[in-house]
Amino acid sequence: MSFHGVDHCMTGGDEVTIRVMSVEMNPPELTRPALDRPLAEVARCLEVDPRVPELVPGFDAPFFQAGLAGYSDGAMRLVARTHGCPFCVTEALLDVTLINGGKGRAREDPDLLQESCGTGDIKDNLAAGGSDHPLAGQVMGTEPETMAKAASLLVKMNYDVIDVNLACPVKKIRKRHRGGHLLTVPNEAIAILEAVREVVPDSIPVTVKMRRAFDESDEMADNFERIFTAAYDLGCAWTTVHCRTVQQKYKGPGRWPFLKELVERHPDKLIFGSGDVWTVEDIFLMLEHTGVQGVSVARGCIGNPWIFRQARSLMAGEEPQAPLLSEQRKALLEHFHLSARLHGEQSASRQMRKFGIKFAHHHPDPEAVRLKFISVRSIAEWHAVLDEFYPVEPAGHSDSDAQ
Image 1 (tube, rainbow, N blue to C red):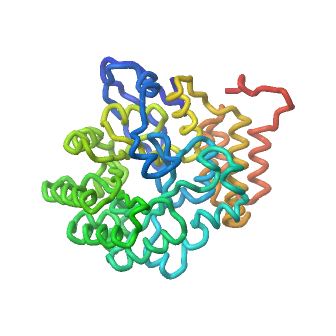
Image 2 (cartoon, rainbow, N blue to C red; image 1 turned 45 degrees about the vertical axis):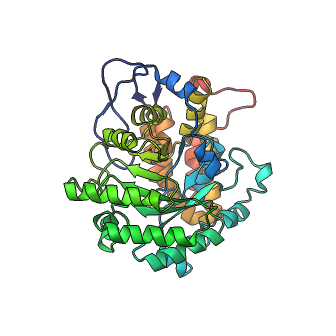
Image 3 (tube, one colour; image 1 turned 180 degrees about the vertical axis):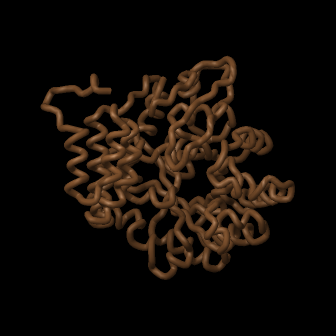
């Protein structure tokens, strides 16, 4: 099968080299593990770990949308949910910003979002309820006290899960001793986890986002193991482990064998994997090869909500379908209108450029569409791109031949 112009071998045999598309940067060629059975069979036979939906009702599939700085706002999450995404994570919300009433107290509140975007009652919506639930509020900070206070605020805002970010590799975050920096100071990281778990009710899972270490040194590997073990000892429900180091940021391939070894060392723990998940095939390759119970889909779902629909199709024993032009137009319009309700039309027209150029990968003429979206400066120009490249088809007409 091929999605986004990416060819994957679906059967066992020799190792397979896969060229993946560029999202934020140009990823390298990835050597994927060989499987001893077809990937379609892997997906069809997969069973969701029962602990996951027991902890988070509605989280009914072994994949979810990651928190993506600058991308995974309510609009992106709601579009993903209408295409089968069972669970989402907010981008990292700073503890001091939450406490001071900034971002996260309005535009990220899942119930205010439901009201402002007009998604209506849960029972009236499609796919995972259609509202922005179940949802993890991801919090990031430095001090146990402020992290605990911010986590308490997220609980009051009706988040279903509280996720602690010990992974962010951005330099300015590390300089402020947040995110991935905390992997260098295990005592401080563990103190934060303890403070957050103490204030969050037992009925709400606390989870942790980590990277496999700060760097490649033995000291940092030991730090990871200390924090990882302490998280579960303190009662955290699961960890999501990105298989790059903090210093790697997003450069070079992730180390899937690390995830496999981690699961083998801790077979009783819920562990989710993250890193180099670009296509629907990658979801099931990671699940099968590493043994993680869930896969975090990050850059691979930007402009690609269909990855979740395709994953559900594979699990149902069906051939996953690339999106028709009409489906692409519908998703783009839905995303734009939700973004406009959240951010205002002028802001949305600017913000949606970065999504438009990723949606363009699905179009038969991706480069022309990408260049058009890059130049968009107004609402009128946005709609002009849709009308030019995603025309409304007459009733009863199928655009399947255009794909």
